[in-house]
Amino acid sequence: MDPLRIVFLDRDTFPESIDIPAPSVPHEWIVHARTTAEQVVERIRDADIVVTNKVVLTAAMLQHAPRLRMIALAATGTDNIDLDACNLRRIIVSNVRDYAAHTVPEHTFSLILALRRNLLAYRQSVVDGRWHDSGQFCYFDYPVRDLAGATLGIIGRGALGEAVAEIARAFDMRVQFAARRDAGAPADDYTSFTHFLRTSDVISLHCPLNEQTRGMIGAEEFALMERRPLLINTARGGLVNEQALEHALESGQISGAGFDVATQEPPGPDHPIMKLLRFPNFILTPHVAWASQEAIRAMATQVRDNIEAFCRDAPRNVVAGFHG
Image (cartoon, rainbow, N blue to C red; front, top):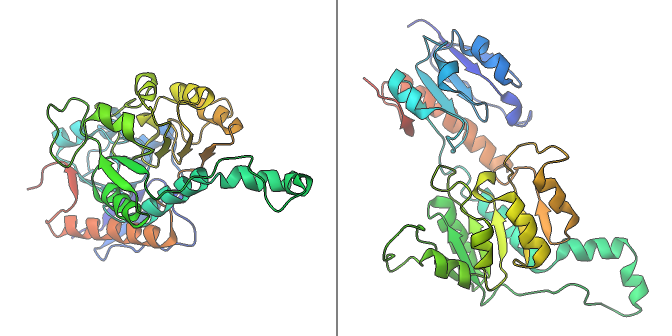
C-alpha cells in the first residue's frame, strides 16, 4: 500500500499541548496551522485524506482534489462541508461523536449558574467598591435565583441534551424537551414548541445548525417567552437571530443569555454579538464549551480511529459518501 497523503488543514484549532496520535497505516502527514479559503485548493489538491475542524470545503474546492477519498472531521458539526458534493464524489465524511458529553453540559451549567446568581455582575460591583460603600455585610443590587423548582427547556435530544437534562434533575429542576415547531401532536415526552417557549425558566440549545434550525429563535419566539427565561447557546451561532437577541435583552423579554458561539467566529468588533457585552446579564465565551483537556484528547483519538477504520474498509461515524 502506497503511503496515504493526509493533510490537516487547521491544527491550531487544537491546543499545542495536546498530542494528535498519527494513524498506524503508512502515510505522509502534512500539517497546516491554519488554512484560508484561498489556500484550500492548493493544499488539498494531492490529498487522499483531509482532516479539518472548521475549514470550509465547498463543491468548487473539492473538484480540484481528484485523489480525495475521505474527509475526517475533527468536530461533530458538518455545516462546513458540502455533503451533497461528497455524496456525488463518493468521498467518505466521518465526524467525531460524544467526545463532549461532559465538557459541554458542564459549560452549559457554568453559564446557567453564573447568570442565575448574577456572579459576574456581583464580582464587578465588588471590584468597583460597591461592597465597601454599602456599609453592611451584603447588598442586593442584582437578583439571585435558585435552580431548584425551575423549568429547564432543552432544544435537541442527542447525547448533549440528555446529559444537560441529567444535571438539571440533580439540581431538582423540571426538564422539558421541545418538539419540532412543525410537529403535529407532540409525543408524550415532548412539549409543543409554543408551550415550551411560554413555560421555560431556562432554555438551552443543543441542536445542529441546518436549514430547519437556522434562526429558530427570533423576535417572534422571544415575544412568547412569558417567564423571561435565560437563553443558553453552546451549539451554533446561527440558531439565534442576534439582532432579536439584543432587543430581547434590552427590553427584558429574557433575564439574560450565555453564548459560546456566534454567527461569525471570531466576531469582529462591529459584529452584533459584541454589542451585547454592554449588558451585565450577557456572557460570551470564545467557543470553548467543547474544549476541556479530556474532551480534546478524546476527539484527537477519534479522528485517528476514524482514519484507521476507513483504511480497513470499515468506515465509521459516516455522515456522507458511499463506500465500496
